[in-house]
Image 1 (cartoon, rainbow, N blue to C red):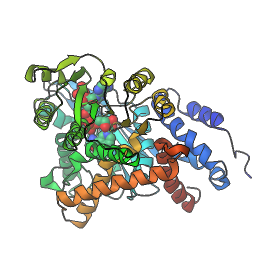
Image 2 (cartoon, rainbow, N blue to C red):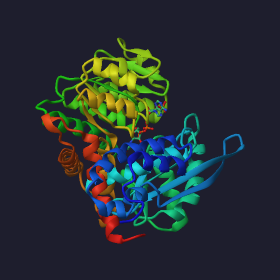
Image 3 (tube, rainbow, N blue to C red):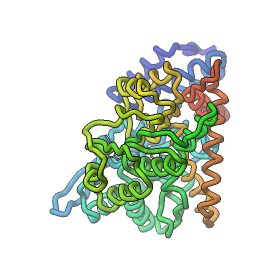
Length: 450
Ligand code: NDP
């Protein structure tokens, strides 16, 4: 047996912290997974001998590059771009691109690590990656965003490809940015190929991709509720965010007969006790994607609603869907939700709940769907966009909607397989971590030491 076998969790995490100084988000994400995997690997010597978890917690590569662009006032601006190619054991690297001032190497490494497990859970052949830049698209003109995207892709294009690495959108990267980046890729390579997903429908995008993450998070919630003999209908929901994921989650909750009470952005949240109807959701979508305004403007449009600074977790509701960003729901806020009688939490965002907040949900035996399972609908439909591009065909929204529903049911099933506890409670974090890990680990074992 190798000398390094069977180090304990604490020693393993001390090594991760030492090798990744200051990368708090990445260390947090590895810790969350390692807790469950160590227990699972306890009697599986072959994984220990192959140092599988240690290898998974070391990205295949991290590419970092300068992105220069000229603003409308002819100032030269310099940003930093990254692509983290975490693991391609089961398929080409796949994961979004984020443009936000809070982007760091640590944030992207955590997202790429999580993505590896999430993509594995979908059952589709996709590895894990993530990229982005510390660029803030807010307040920039279309021309500035275009120049930035073109400059970003001028470096990124040499590292990606339909069989190598297929990025998608994420925070700050929607249809407009994907269009500019795809155009630049095509110009540089003289190839039309499915190298990005989340494309416009006119040029190879898939039906249902914009809706997939938010709808999928609600389908996951629906499956959790069904498992305990409940349904979305007649229940109230608090949702954070007002972007792609949040607005589509709100739409699906409303369609299923639930009532959405809140939406938010980085300025604060709106509380609408009458419920945020489809008409109001459409208004928010227009506000955010066309007018590029702030959620506070909602209260000027719809009477009865109020705007508050901070986050929405103090509003009493049956269901909670964090759909904005990482670490946006802490221990105190989790306690507040539990105190107000929340029944289920489904994460549209990636790692929105802190480790301490997750413990509160587990201790209270609340149905809690972690992002790597609950928001996997987005990347799953991205995988289907890749398939359609390869086949040079388009499937209709009805077919894709059915596939998304089935995929989310399948992911829920995998989580219960490994997460079912005595007394009927399902530990979805454990279930998702083990199911996601196993497939990637077994593929890596087949390759030997590479
Ligand atoms: P968008 O850019 O469309 O929306 C992001 C929303 O979150 C905005 O309302 C934004 O507010 C808010 N937000 C961003 N940063 C912060 C912050 N630091 N504090 C408070 N609010 C913030 O992004 P998406 O909807 O695409 O992504 C949301 C989350 O879902 C992310 O965690 C992402 O990784 C995850 N996700 C997205 C997928 C997708 O398909 N798009 C797939 C899987 C996961 P503001 O306008 O003020 O910035």
